[in-house]
Image 1 (cartoon, rainbow, N blue to C red):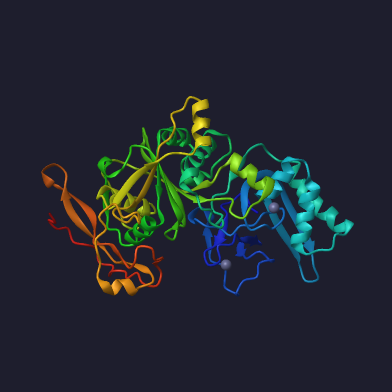
Image 2 (cartoon, rainbow, N blue to C red; image 1 turned 90 degrees about the vertical axis):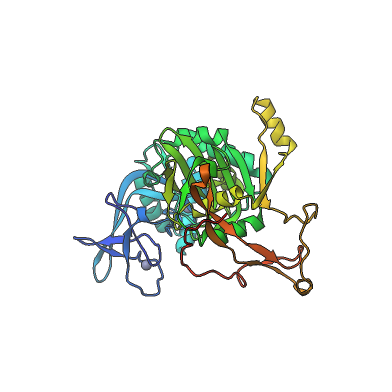
Length: 430
Ligand SMILES: [Zn+2]
Ligand SMILES: [Zn+2]
């Protein structure tokens, strides 16, 4: 529940903090069970993840911020009066938002009573209803997508990608707000334009492992047009990557530079109508970070977009094999009906890694036949010459390969060996 001043959350447990007294001190919400640590207040705008709960029912996956009446409740206890500032911005979960939109505030109150573990007593209902009504009676139009909730991951398949792209485009074109801290309020129409022109890339599981591994060691990279596989694009990793837990990235040419947006999936674990409405109104992806990259900009290896840049580099150095796949017939028909060209899906996998065996798989030593899993043998980045007169340098990932039988599962966590963290020296690799 937010107050008009900058909202703070605890850097240790990522929970929004309440204020107490004047000048305010920051305290954990009273209902929160902590391990006893002291609150470490930071502005929520600095956090990618905030452990917020629905202000109506306590659900751990709120999706919308609603704006309404300023609500203050005073509880008089045996020792002191506690002033609880509920603020004028409330977080709502998908279910509560659905019930509120349908005028079923009684169901929202049922949810709150269940969450609080209270007896369903008329007095209890009345008190909760008063709080909810104080907020809802002064509700303002519009709502803002909450992008800091960590949802259970949703796997996006390659065939779903055109629909995922279309819903995201529609969201950018719509009237629901995005948090101002993302910095794309003014460019969302141009990002939507870019998505409509996008090439669609779906990264397979093995290539995702490789890209994430390579991203962890990424040196500083100069991002130029020829590094990027298409002017506008969107790509999907089938599982969350890096500490930011990203599942997608989009890039678009805009008058202000290249708009790069990084996404997490939303809606995992929802069912029924709330899920259906979320997919209709938002889709599968919520922006987590956005940035503008100018041509030839050098970005550090620990940049939020490192996984995207590593994926671009690996595609550019032809570690990738990119095959096109047909979209399924229903999607093709939908596009045909609206006179849009049928989108082409690009599936990115590791060159020569397909089990169909038609790509000259190198024979391996006999000791590998006894292994029951495959594992990555660490590669490393090295700057190589490229471009006119070989005057430019670009990191190339050297010698990453898989060891073990082709059909064996890839063991990642136990056997990846990270190289030391020293940065590769520039050299004239030819
Ligand atoms: Zn804390
Ligand atoms: Zn709720």
